[in-house]
Length: 484
Ligand code: NAD
Image 1 (cartoon, rainbow, N blue to C red):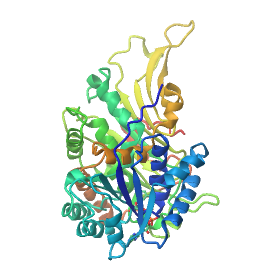
Image 2: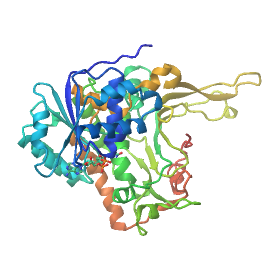
Image 3: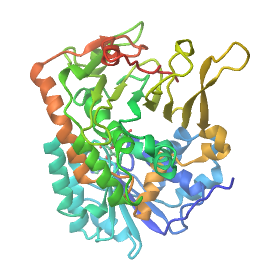
Image 4: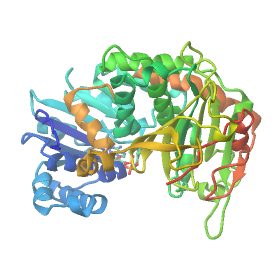
């Protein structure tokens, strides 16, 4: 199969925070991979803009180091790195002052695509937006990309949206959630809306429940102080998992375009029920062996922040009323695994009798690792001995089905940055979506704060607190195994 790379038009991309962790680890390595794939036009230029005093030559050296550190060795072709570095410039800039702005304005070229990536703390979004306008860097055709976290509650998200809206219209603002750039997440839409097979069954009549798991093996080390102010609910559920729920639950949009897709996602968020306190389990990992526990890593001995959360959610609309969505996410768990499982109902009557056992079709969408989609189908166990039934997977692990091309697929950041250049907002969150997600999240978090309730403890390397098992057990269901 020949890989299809659609080139983009010439552009100037300015990365505010161009020396930061995100720029070095994700944005620039991603851009380099697109450059190597032949997607960047000869007229593409990237400008790193940050607080440090350095020359363009020194910046190129820094980024060369980052590419070698964060890319696979096979990607690090020295000739390609050298020509990629030639597309980089650097400007020392003060987001809250005057330094660097006229230099930046002089560097930007007229009449080509212009994008500004705000890879800085959200407190700098306003000052950057204001200065971009004051120094005439931002015309009506430019785009800005903003990173998470987009607010920490409804009020702060509304304030951020209002600040950006003073200088940019909604069509210019690209709020990134890298989960939406994942190959399998987009495939979820292709599977749902590109096949006749699933859509007639995709409802409460046929789906028993949905499980979403985002499990990490890492703790919060290094990010403890930041994480402790946020917790799993704000860090994972309000954004990434909410986006996954939307894509599973939304109605078919009339077209795969930004407004149609985002309108349907918004309707899902608005239909989410507020969960009962008894439908939520929060957890915090303890220490184990040499490893520190959550509180120690967060530097907060009395912390009540959750490093794990499991919830049962209801969606009040005709399609989903009565079908629970179970989600769980946490740190320091048994394995790193993200998957969505759509568990279909039992056949209404088993003609094979009780001995045949209970079998269900489960559609599993695996986000990481081993991206792919699997459908569990019940068949007869081969051999003599009557009708014994077993479940076997119809497997579409991308690496097996698509060969080396699957490995070469752009990662989430690469794909999303190219979408920005193309001007396609479909895979970015709209302001009203973000606000609706916070409006649903806020009362839940406020209730915890009011109660001062401590999360349940769980051991590192486990599947989370015991209490989370009960969320499903009480209705006769069980969590799927967390496996790498
Ligand atoms: P960082 O601290 O490593 O880098 C911050 C960058 O901002 C530096 O380049 C610094 O020079 C620049 N900067 C700071 N103050 C400035 C000022 N006054 N004027 C001009 N430049 C200034 O941060 P990071 O980890 O790269 O994160 C950047 C943003 O992306 C943050 O909002 C973070 O929450 C978000 N984010 C980061 C990650 C990640 O993996 N690092 C993931 C998701 C979201």
